Image (cartoon, rainbow, N blue to C red; front, side):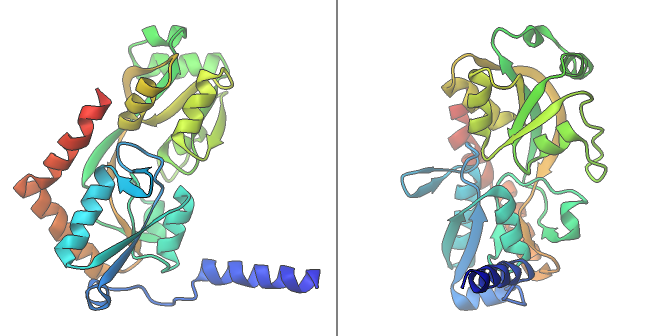
Length: 269
């Protein structure tokens, strides 16, 4: 019986990874069905977070507007960041939006919309850390290396690739440091506040929010890298990409995306 259960679990996992649904939904399919399925990881304020059962944030308002643009209903699934991308590549959802950086590595398995937002990676440290006085990227990286720092990040994000190094991302990594991954950025910053790690590398907007909410930590005002956020869809789903690109261009032109940014960015001050 145990062997049979194990076999069923394995087959279920294989079905998810290879996709029981063999074909993605084009934008025409989505409109005909009358619903779009979106995956996210709602642990990344001000881009995506929840209050009760309501999804809020820049990305969430933006993608709800896209559903209205298509005149369809929207279902948002809150799952792990890596799983959100896997769900799209396995045709379990139509798209993923979660502060996702478009790069060559991810483009091997996913297609992406045009960029809708430019983000920056920054370092958070203890307010008593000597690193707070540093003013250049070189100084910060040298200090982290020489102290053999334990650096936290959210699992599967740019921060992890920046710390560990990754050829596809063209990141050399931070020498002589240890990368500690967490399910969310908030958990990483909490670990920093509790003295369990020495620093956190994360996107600038959520970094400022976390530092406002969690005492004893602060952002070093130096940008490590910049990247472009885009919406992920199934590889080859060109019709959905074209539709998203038209929507992004329209929102930038008519000021509606700027209005969403202004709505939430007041919270980062």
